[in-house]
Length: 552
Ligand SMILES: Nc1ncnc2c1ncn2[C@@H]1O[C@H](COP(=O)(O)OP(=O)(O)OP(=O)(O)O)[C@@H](O)[C@H]1O
Image 1 (cartoon, rainbow, N blue to C red):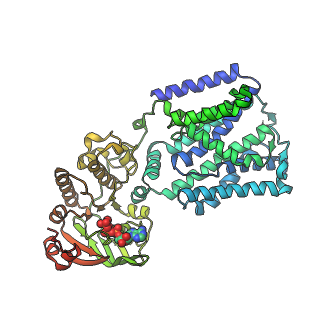
Image 2: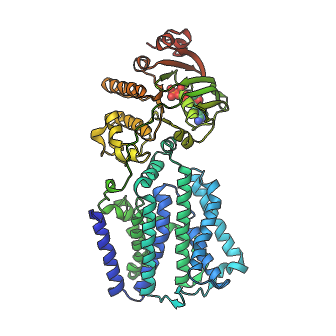
């Protein structure tokens, strides 16, 4: 609780408690409890929508399922607290686990549509499965919450209970996103390809967050069922989802606190504008629009940002690997439609060696790196690293085996500092790595604020932080000035001398040929020439591949 943000938050929590205990009464308590219940569901939504950047349209469905599960277990099975809340939490988690496998593979709008479809199915089931759900009329007489036979009265006791739950859920959510976890999630959201290529297991993170969001949604729905006493298909309606979405956006999608502020505001706004009679909806809509236009980072964006560098990130001095394995690519082929992007390509890169990969645009260089790093699956051929057969394995497995890559267009999380970008992927000594790539003075700079040359160096440092012994570098010198190229060249020599294996793609022959120990020239997916740099530079096939121009 040292930085200004934490102090403000503490003051806000105390003010809310004083308001609840000494000033609010009757209906105001109900409104506050309702805000707390929605806050819990919105905190869950923030994890998926805010943190992962995935537009899930199932959070309202998880909320409604939680409400139905709690109501049904209370009314039909005579379950008491805490079993009803447990059932309300477990059912949406179960559904999330079942749908996660097919749904989490989908990208952006397909994910949104799939989750919307699931939500619609839940509404249909609730409306038509009359024997169980009570159909359109729903279920009545859900008992209030009770602890060991003692009923939690509406008003202050229920409000305090709900907001204690909000506090616990906030702490849990913070644990999930603090320190390195948060840095990894941000890398995954902003640079998903790089995250996979650095060994971050995006599938596991997405799965975990989706299930936790379902748990929070269901738990909130279960609380709602007990607080209101009635559950109808309304709790599954699109309205709940839109409300949770608005709470997360208006409160601020970057932090769970935003979800709480959004819930407090959006539940109270209709109450404040109630006196405007017919103009109530106009005033409500105008307030929402104003919040979206003038507060792009939401209400939480008004608070001073948290001191992220204070987050505990373990830092043991583990320098990049040495004496790694030899990469052997054997007869690799990959077709896209009718095009042979790679046809029977073989090559090796040994520790301490720099192998240059050249060829005109579209000759298959990036495809080769994509296949080696698991971003594309080959049609035939093998990729071995030492004794391990890595053919067709997912990128994060290959990264963990010691192969990392950089991208033609740097893939970075722009809001992470340079140091955080490294901390996200490994335990390495960030200072040493940054000094190695010449970024030591920019450790606290936002990665997105680095010039292109800096971002390319950051990508190399990040690959080393991930513990790579083989680096596949896709056009690292593109766009660099002559002095920057010279610095990059001496860095690559240093890394090779240190035992790293380097596969280097570049069109700049004056940069690549003096650096490489061997060169492989691709043409239309096939190996056109291979050998020492000066041999390849003179090779008729290699020269022809460059449209008749001498590469030197
Ligand atoms: N995902 C894809 N879908 C369809 N075709 C693809 C895909 N990726 C690459 N290709 C095609 O495969 C061929 C090889 O492309 P690749 O990007 O590997 O070449 P490159 O040598 O890296 O080119 P550049 O120097 O321009 O980066 C090209 O014809 C390209 O259009």
